[in-house]
Every structure is written in C-alpha cells, then in structure tokens.
Image 1 (tube, helix red, strand yellow):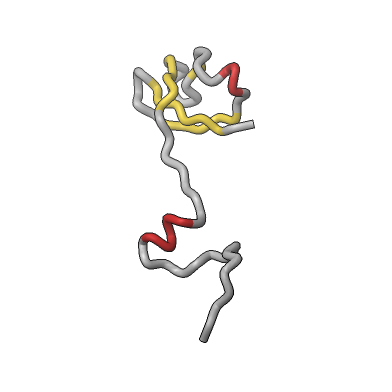
Image 2 (image 1 turned 135 degrees about the vertical axis):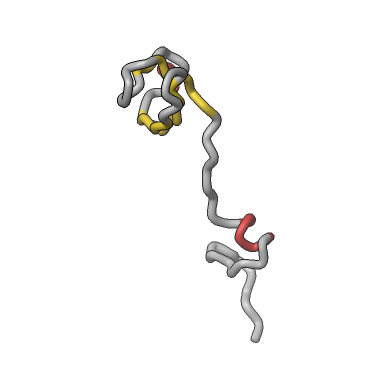
Length: 68
C-alpha cells in the first residue's frame, strides 16, 4: 500500500498517510486542525542511475565486471 502526502487547505500542515490507490483522492481530515486536506505531489527517492549520474558510487547491482 503506497504512502500519499496531503496538505491542509486551512493550516497548510503536510502529512503522509498510507492509503489504497482507490482512496488516494478521497477527502481526508487534517490531523492538526481537522480541516480538509488535499493530495500533493510527493518527491521520492531512488537508488541507482541517479547516484551514478551525479558522480556518486555505484550502489551495486551492476553486472559488468570491475577491472583494476
């Protein structure tokens, strides 16, 4: 089950909730002020090509041999 982030339309509180995909856009109550929350686009993190592209170390999983 995925996590979704929501922002309160009243107090701007942001929180994450684990919800089923079918419920992702259903109304949700703010845990802070009980106002109405709306789903926001969440940033997410991946491991892999982005680390190599940024000059980071290869996190593993590569099938190519390492020659020294």
